[in-house]
Structures are given as structure tokens and as C-alpha cells.
Length: 112
Length: 112
Image 1 (cartoon, chains in turn blue, green):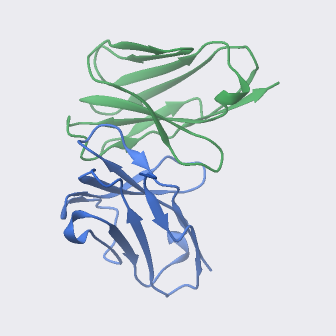
Image 2 (cartoon, helix red, strand yellow; image 1 turned 90 degrees about the vertical axis):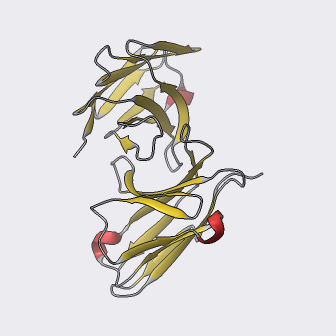
């Protein structure tokens, strides 16, 4: 197993466009998390799945953000009508039981 | 909402000197984790503390969880260049870690 993988690693888009990020967790992990990190800050919680169920979503997340985890395997995070303030590193992490989080390399988003 | 603060924000030390970072939560935690993020990298799990007053050691690293379970510290003895990076604490108010709140981080640089 190669760990948590994220795609794409870098995405540059124009304001107003939609973007989608994909995360493939470690195969036996039933928990999957999305975090957002801006320069000089700690990761900020966005949402969390246990298997295919989205159990919690940050109140900071606007309606432009949506995440799915069909069949409890890979997950996608979509941002609609991107704004410059959405520019950040989007980190995915998985966990087998809620202990240690295994992070992917992240998807860096730049909104022009 | 829950806030987790870390001090200092930055620390520059001579190689061989000790280093300590402190973590304070606005709410009582069920457990706390520590992560290290190398420049350009993703957070990597170091340890989890669960019990009030718990102390754990990993070679030159010593982790403590406060008696009130609202603060924690990480101490590195005799720093090496490989210790460079940002150290984050991350706390949860439930043992299932459904939502880890990361601290603001302490960035450690080593002067050779």
C-alpha cells in the first residue's frame, strides 16, 4: 500500500470556475477527513466520513463546498464558483479507527 | 468554538540546544496528538496522549499532557538538523477523534 494519494497535486483555476479534488485513502481505513491549510497556519477541519456516511461538516464550509465518498472508498471534494479566498492546500487524511491520521501530500489550489 | 493555541510561533535554536513548544486548548480535551510537518511536506503523526498528566518519550522527544487535559508540551533535547519543521498539536473533545482541531503550530529552524 502506498498510503493516501491525492489528485491533482496542483490546480490553477480562474475565479468562478469549479474544481474537484480526489482522495484515495489507505484501503482498510474506514475514516476519511478533509482539511484545508493556508500558509503559516495549522490544518483546518472541513469534513469527515465514516465509510460512505458524511458525519460532520465544518460550519465554516460554505454551500459552495461539497464532498462525497461513494461506496466508502475514494472521496471527492468539489468547490463551485471558486473565489480567491479558496486558495489553499487541501489535505486528505484517513484513519482506521479514529487515532492517528495518515495525511496525503495534498492538492494545492490557486485561484486567479 | 474550540481553539488551540501554540507558543512560540517561531523558534530558532543552535544545533544541540533544547526546544520546547506549548499547546493550550480553550476546552478540556479527551486526547491530544502531535504532528510534524517538514517544509513542503504533509503532517506526520508523532504521538497521542490520552491520560491526565501523561508523559511519553520518543528518543530525544518528550511529550506531556496537562493534569487538566487542556494543555500539552513537546520538548526536544539536543536538537539536530533533522528536527527542522513545524510542530502541531491537535486536540479532540471526544475519544473517537471525529474532529481534530489543530493548533497554530511552532516552526523550528536549526542554526548549524
